[in-house]
Image 1 (cartoon, one colour):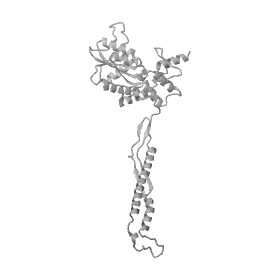
Image 2 (cartoon, helix red, strand yellow):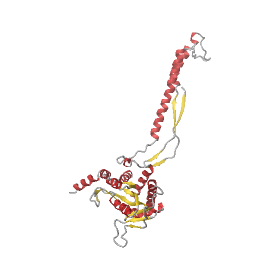
Image 3 (cartoon, rainbow, N blue to C red):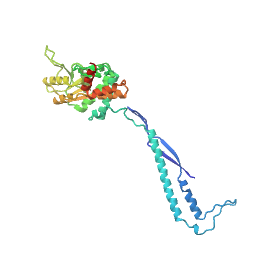
Image 4 (cartoon, one colour):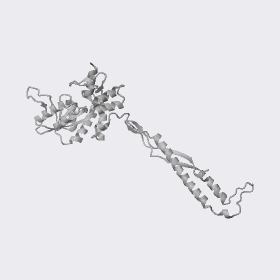
Length: 350
C-alpha cells in the first residue's frame, strides 16, 4: 500500500505580541502522514487485472500471463470504477488534512478576551484608539500612586452629602515626577488634537489643585500661564485672575478633576468677565457619572477634555486584580446610579 506524506504549513512564525491579555503566537508547521488513497482502489485494480487475463502463478520459474482472449480488452466498467474511487480517495485526503489543520489552529492560537465585560468601552463611543490608550495609562498611574481608593464597606462622603465607595485625590500626583510627566505629555497631545496647535493664547489653572498642572501644560504648549481664584481676593487690585490676561486672549482652563462642574462654571465666568475667551477646559480626571456636567458646561459653550473617568479606573482595577471580594460589584452599582446607591447605604446605616 502506498503512503503519501503531506506537509501543511499554516501562517508564518511571528514574535509573540504584547497586550493586556497575554501573548498570541501564530505559525508553525504540521506534518501529517496519511495513508494514500491507493488502498481504496486496490480491490478495483485486482478485479480489472483478473478480467484482463492477468493470472498469478506460484511456480518457481516465474509468472506468465494467460493467452490473450476476449478478456484482454480494457473493461470500461472497471476503469470507471477505478477513476471514481480514485477521486473519492483524493477528496478524503483533503478532508483529513483540513481536519488536522483546524485542530492545529485551535490549539496553537490563544484568543485574547477580556476577563469581564461589565464595564464596556461603549461609555466612550467617540474615543479614538490613542485616547483609549491614554485612558488606560492614566488609570494605571492613578492606581499605582494610590490616588484612587475603593471603600464600599465604609463609604466616603462628598461635600454634597453623597455617599460614595470611591474617592480620588489628584493632588497626590504632584509628588510622582515620572507619573506626572507622562500625564502632562498625554494632556498636551489631547489638547492639541481637539483645540489645535495655534488656537490658544494662555493656560489658566483653577485655584488651587489646577495650578501646578496648568503650569506644566503651559510649559509643554509654550504658552503663558495664569491662575484663577475662586473669588476676588478682596484687597489691592481685588483681582480674581493672577498673571497677564490680554483682552480677547483665548484661554484654556485646567483643573485636576471634574465631578458636577460647578467650580468650572465659576472659573469660566471669571475669565470671560476679565476679557478672555474660553471654549475648552481640561481635567486629568472626569467622574463621568454625573450627566448634569455635560449639560451645564455645554450651556456655557465649554467642551470638557479629560484623560480618564471612573469607568476607566474601575475597569483597569478589575483587570489588574485590585478589588477585594465584593468591591467590584459595589463600585459598579454606584457608577450606574450614584444617587440610588447613596440612599441605600444611608438607609442601611440607620
